[in-house]
Image (cartoon, rainbow, N blue to C red; front, side, top):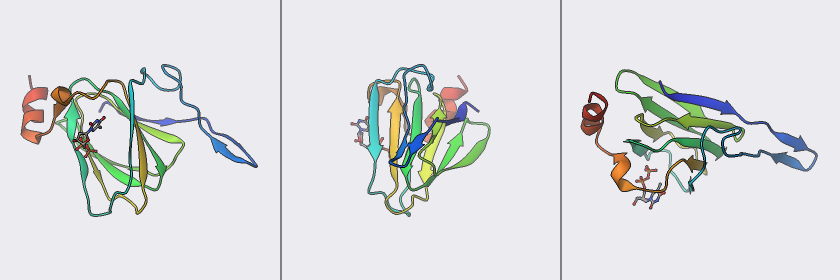
Length: 132
Ligand code: TYD
């Protein structure tokens, strides 16, 4: 399945920790967009879509949540719970976010500008799209 966990180098000292992210260096694309998700609640589910073009990296800057990833053939669940780990999600992967911890903050880096046209928001449409 077209996802991977990226372990970012952490620069830490007595003052705290710092993680740099650079286009095409420690991540595999150029960032066109960044958004963040916060004030989530444990019972809520987010995502539930796939992208035709956009690649993304999600970092749980604070707290945790569980990702469900589905390439149309298999499903995998991944906990995201470290600010020094990025979950790279390629295009054509159905993703859902579940089980947010209270106060969870997710930062998402995206390879494309926001374009609703490149979203697939229904699972049936996703199955049809990938079987083309
Ligand atoms: P939505 O795709 O429902 O969020 P999630 O997949 O995390 O559950 O997005 C929520 C709203 O925000 C929706 O109206 C679209 C808008 N939005 C933007 O305008 N720009 C963006 O970059 C993103 C990610 C969402």
